[in-house]
Amino acid sequence: MSEDTHRPDYGQMLASISVPVLLISPDHCIDYANDASEAFFGRSKRRLEGQRVDETLIFASERMNAALRSFDSDISAQDMELKTPHGLITVDISLSSVSKDPDWRIAIISPRNGGREHIGDQRDGGQQQAMGAPAILGHEIKNPLAGIKGAAQLLARQVDEKNIALTDLIVNEVDRIARLLDQMQKLGRSEPAELAPANIHLLIERAIRSLRAANRAMPEISINYDPSLPDVLIDADGMVQVLINLLQNATDAMQGRLDGVIGISTRFVMSGALRDADADRRSIKLPVEIAISDNGPGVPDHIVDELFSPFVTTKRDGQGLGLAIVRKLVQQMNSRVLFERDSAQGQTIFRLLLPVASGKVNV
Image (cartoon, rainbow, N blue to C red; front, side, top):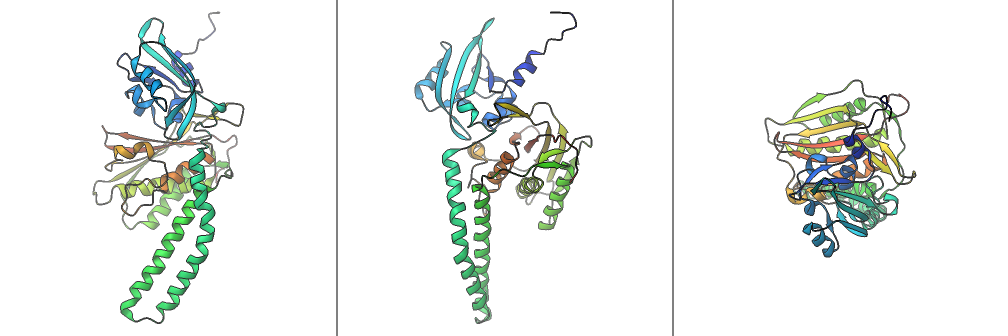
C-alpha cells in the first residue's frame, strides 16, 4: 500500500455494510449496531446498544434461542425465522468470536429472498392482507353510511328540541366511522408514491399551520432548522400528512401540561440508509433527518415494539391508525421512521430519514 493511500476507518466499513451487524460484549449485551440494524429492527442505535442480545434476537426455533443464550460455540444457521417488529423474517445468521478477544462476538444477519422482507420493502404478508380487507370493504360500507346520515338529517327537521341531540349523535358517529374507513383504506393502498424534489422546511411550515388551525391550545414549538439542507425526493402531500400525524401525537401527549414543548429540528446526517430490494440490492442513502420531539410522558413499554402496527394506541378515543399510516407513507417514499425515548432528557423522539433529490426544485 502506498503512503498516499488512505485506509477507511473500520467503523465506517461496518456502518456501510447493508445487512445488520452486531458486536456482542462478554456480558451478552449489544455493544455496537451498524446502520442497517436500525432499519432492520426498527429501533435507533441508542435503543439497540445496551440491550441483551437474546432479547433482541428472538427466533421461532427454541433450539436456536437456546444456542444463542449458551455462547458455548460459534453459530452458523440458514433459513431461520427471526421475530421482528415487522413480523417473522427468514434470515441466515453467523455468530462468531473475535479472533483476539474470544469473549466478544460478532453477529451478522442476512435476510433471505434478497431482503424482500427488509424494512426497505416491508411486504408484511399477513399484515398487508389484514390492511387490504378494510380497504375493499370501505367502499361498500360508505354507501349505507351515507343513507343513514341523510335519514338522520331529515329526521332532525321533524323531532322536538330534546331529541335533536340524538340525531346529532347519529350524524357525528357516521362522520367518525367514515373518517376511520378513509384511514383504513389508505393503509390498504400499495401504489407507489409520486416522488418529486421538495423543500422540507416549507412542508414543515405547512404542517404547523394546519395543526394550529385544528387545535385551540398548542404547546410551545421550538424550531431548529439547518438552512443549508438540499431538497429531498418525496411525495409532498404525503410528507405533510406524516408531519401532521407526528405533530398531533406530540400535542396530544402533552394535554394538560403547562410546560409542554414540541421540538422540530432538521440536519444532515451520514448514517441513514436502507436497501432497495428491487434494485439489485442497491443501498439508498437517507442523509436528511427531521426530528420531532416532545416532553410528554412517553410510550408505555408494553407497546413500544408494536408502535407502528394498526390499532395500537394509548389514547382513550384513538383508533391506532396514525402511526401505521405514517410508516406506510414513509415506506412509499423510500424513507424510514425511527422511534426512541430519551429518558435522561425526558423526551419522546420520532426521526424521519429522507433521500436527497438530484435536482433542487422547491415546492
